[in-house]
Image (cartoon, rainbow, N blue to C red; front, top):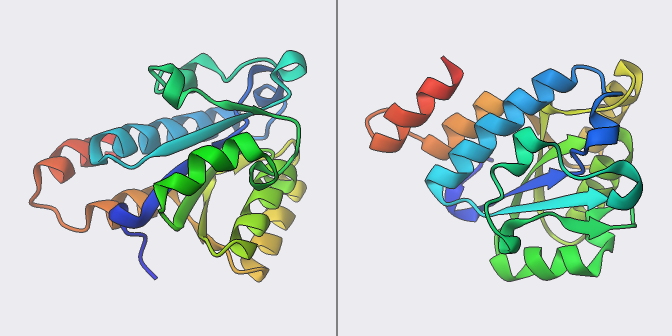
Length: 182
């Protein structure tokens, strides 16, 4: 199944200050998250973000937070590992009525995994962006991606999402957004 822009929502899971420094390839994650947040903004794909216990883990990193310009787009604070287990988060996600959940964030083997598996149970098609998720160890990341795939998630890359959203080269959006990956 192709990821369709009109059915998509972009989920940004817990990309926070105290977590990011411990992540394997954290700089790659931030770069790719930035690409998809810019594309989502241009293509009007709604974004729902979360912060796991921000009092202890700090806020969303500035390189990501800059894409959340107002209170309505600011990250939802949560205590549950799964975003789908948090009522405040689901209060933002459900009204969107978009069933293609494109998921990015940290940690892959905890909050991303639990969110994806619960959203599948809720009828979402989950696309986990492999180069925009991470864990502290490559092993945890690899096993999380394998487990999510075995449970029905599509494992994709940043460029797969971008080009599936764009669908054609001749549009103004394509001309603008292709520059993000060149």
